[in-house]
Structures are given as C-alpha cells and as structure tokens.
Picture 1 (cartoon, rainbow, N blue to C red):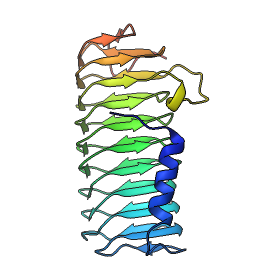
Picture 2: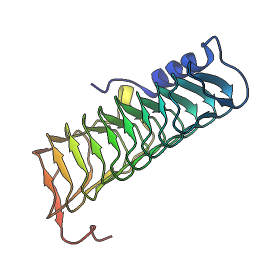
Picture 3: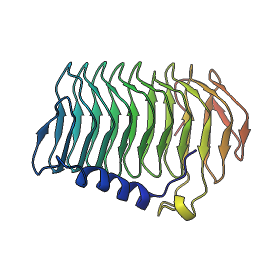
Length: 229
C-alpha cells in the first residue's frame, strides 16, 4: 500500500545516502558494492552489475544493459538506460525515467518528480508520485498507479495491472496543488483493476481503451489519438 508522506520519504533517502559508510562528496562510478555520495552524480557503467546507489544532491544514471540494486536520490534525476535493471527507484525532487526495455523489479516512487516509462519498459511493483506526473508509452506496470495531484498519461499499448488510485489532498498526502489531476487513457491502453478517485479529476478514456470499474469520477470518452483540448 502507498502510505508515506513526502517528509518521511525525504528523511529516509537522506539517511540512506548520508548514513552509508562509503558515502563521499563528488561524482562516483559505482562498483560491485554499489556507491553513495552526498554532493555528486552516480554512474553505473554499461553492462555492469552493482549494488545499491544513493545520492542526496546529484543524479543517478544506470547505463544501457547495467544492473543495480536500489537507486535512491533526494535532489536529482534517476535515469535507467535501455535494457537496464534496478531493484527499485525513488526520488524526492527529481524525475525517474525508464528507457526502452528497462526494468524495475519493485516500486518506483517520487514526491515532486515526474515518472516516465518509455517503450517496452516495465515496473513490476507500483508507480507512485505525490504531485509529479506519470507518463507511460507502450509500457507495463504490475502494481498500479498511485498519486494525489499528478497528471497521468497512459498511451500506446501500455498495460497497468492494479488499477489507479488518486488520494485525497490531505494529511500524509497533502500537496499545495489545487488543480484537478488530468488522467488520459489512450487508444490501445489497458488498465486492469479499479480506478478509484478520492478527489475531483478530469478523466478521459479512449473509445479503444480497456479499463476496469470507475469509482468517484465520470469518464469522458474520446475518439482519435487524444482528447480535444
């Protein structure tokens, strides 16, 4: 279940990055044991297999064909290259981007960063953000999509198991955004499981998409590639 606040995730990621015994300042090239840094980027070389990688202020790049443990950043982007694999990915203020045919074995989480899954990429667990955005392009998610305020685009032949949950803007899920999230499920996309909306959203569903039962919103059906406007 998605039960965390942004402050909890921030504290956890800082502890992971700063508390590791091998954490340093500056850019790092990950080794078999992984890598941690406070102020710097982390690179996982193409085709290599490494442990977990953690940074506070910097990006993480998992190059094509590489394999890594958990990838965690506080202020930085996480980019997972073509045919690369990580155990999980989480960022507070940074995007998480999966390249073509990339794979995450567990969950992908962010607070304010966008999450983007490119062609044939896969997240076996859930995809969660508070008020970033979520975009799937011919991708697969096994554990559902979760958000408070994110816009969601599910395009191409994307397949989501576990449905969609949009939480109320309150308590642990509070965000300053007052805009209704815009959810678009495009032609050819499949969302299995319930689509549950606990706050007002704009829900657009292609007449060529397949979805499960909808609770808390009225779907607006559209023809063509995308809704008008």
